[in-house]
Image (cartoon, rainbow, N blue to C red; front, side):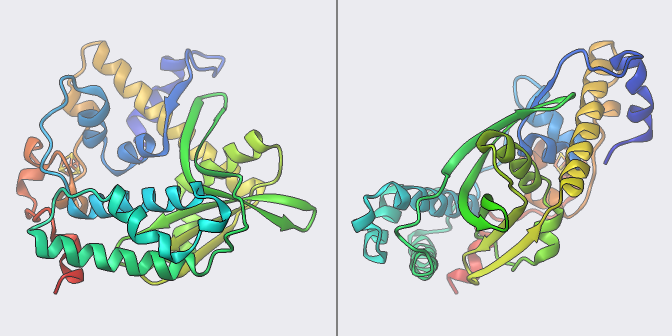
Length: 292
Ligand code: SF4
């Protein structure tokens, strides 16, 4: 998503020695927001007050509930990590927003509980991850990165213990190795985890709970470096756009819209001129197939 305009502006913005004036503090979602749509980034992180958002999405509620239930499963003592604990865990973390009605909410809850029961049956309760919803942070010449990984496992590797990044997914469509390979977030977690835990971390996994499938990619040092470099380029673009706005440029020009399929799912659809052209989705559209 790096634009020619802003990339060309980098030497002026950052100085001729190539060193940034400040590190760009970021998370994967911050970088991803800009890569998806610079205008969405602006609405989320620059404009204050933040433009009004649409109503909460049911699929986000369900995803958050499942993630928290899995986090709390690992917080249980070893002898209580069994599928029987899941109904209580899921009930206590269940987020109710966005559903069409109570019947739909109940059907989605039942589906989520089935996924969790199937998933934890594949886990060894004795396995203690290196981290669960663990924040990993690191710095590069451009970025001060931090992000919360769903899970970081410790697994035996060719040369000793390695860290493995695990990300839970609850969306409708399955995922494959290309998704794991292309995920900048997973690569940045792996890059940071290597430094935080001082051990190799090349393997990243997407665990898709609805299908019970695991999409895997084994990074190399080179592929991690490429993802970090891409993230740094995005950060430079963002900093250049923010500086241009501070210097008087039109924010609508510096943070252009990127109309596309994402607009229908964008929280700022109603605040955005391009979004108003997009088809409106109900807050529960993405979970409807679970309740019919
Ligand atoms: S509605 Fe579309 S163009 Fe507008 S901010 Fe959201 S993603 Fe970007």
